[in-house]
Amino acid sequence: MRSVIDILDLSVAEIDQLLATAQDVIAHPADYAHVCDGKKLATLFFEPSTRTRLSFEAAMYELGGHVISMASAASSSSAKGESVADTAKVVSCYADIIAMRHPKEGAALVAAQNATVPVINAGDGGHCHPTQTLADLLTIWREKGRFCDLTVGLCGDLKFGRTVHSLINALSRYGDVRFVLISPEELKVPSYVKRDVLQAGGIPYEQTTDLEGALPGLDILYMTRVQKERFFNEEDYLRLKDSYILTPQKLKNARADLTIMHPLPRVNEISVAIDDDPRACYFKQVLNGKFMRMALMLKLLKEAGTL
Amino acid sequence: MNIDSIQNGVVIDHITAGRGMRLYELLDLGSLDASVAIIKNVVSRKMGKKDIIKIDAAIPLNLDVIGYVDPGATVNLIRDGKLVEKRSIPMPERLIGVIRCKNPRCITSTEQELEQVFKLTDREKKIYRCVYCETKA
Image (cartoon, rainbow over all chains, first blue to last red; front, side):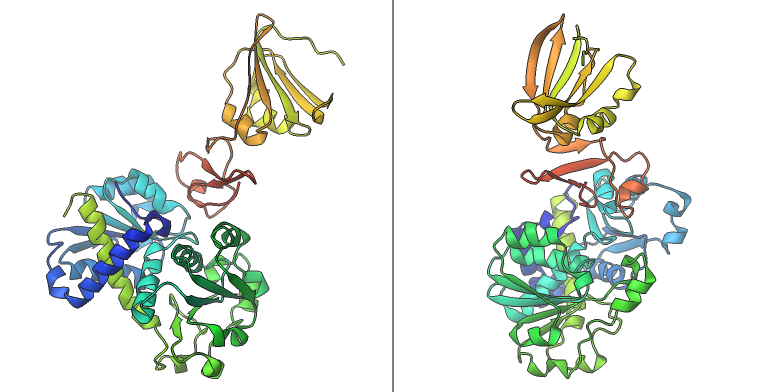
């Protein structure tokens, strides 16, 4: 059974196909309004999330399908000690496809190994979040019209930020892209990502702690939140959380066609004064995420023979 | 130092000096009801120093453990006092049920009876990663 756990589970050709489907959904929503009539998505969210869960649910409703879910992780059978494997087997009896978020890294893979329907990883701890990356790719495609000849700045928590690692992986496969990695020393991109992805692929990159200095050279600025839940020590979190805040003042030297992205939720790393700037694309990213989840669910349901 | 030669069993030779004990532990040789000798820092023309493990019992060994701990080691099978097979052990592509993932956020830390599985991701640097969370072994 085909599932998607990591963005690398999808080939470049498959991602291009998903982008094409998503854009067709955007252009002709009525054509897709009933393609999933009678189908059910189960959303299994074992840790708090509003946006991703609502996005999956909205995506299935817009395809004409239904959603079954649990009120919260506390009310689920996992709170009684049920394993992820058993949960996946049980829910497979009720749903045609599963979207799962779980705090443990690798939980989605365990679910996929045991489910008899496709599983989409909606985030497994700090590990992978492939549909966020799909949202990011559609946003870049719609804003820039290309994945090549781009200078992409990634800023904030580049050590724990799973979306950053996934995006580096995904964009590196398209080749002609340059990365500027902007972060405090403590939150730099892990060496294995630099070695296995950037250096192995011959992708040029530079590391800096200076956001303002890097801004004029960027086509895309991808801001991230310093995530409290990824720290064992609250002191470290408090010391680093305000490291990089994007303000209108800092944007003065940025390009007129800069694309500003953020996986959200933001805490304070982008000033609300930037929200009305035409370069701010983070709310468009949210919408694009729904379209890509529609495209991905259609693909997996078709491959499973359900559609 | 004299150690009796064995009649029926296994000699793990050419172990990098210092890795003998690690192999002994991971192969769980302590639980064997047979003579087992670990000889450390044996002078070797090729290696300078090496460790050797002699097991006086014809038991099946998890060769993946040997390939993981010390891919240069050789396994010699002895039958009736004679060497019947000698082979070097390559690094296994997957390592199942040998080591534990040390990432406390990994699903293997909580999921009931989930087997520990690692895959070889960098042969040159001998790096294994957990298949679930990708943490380095």
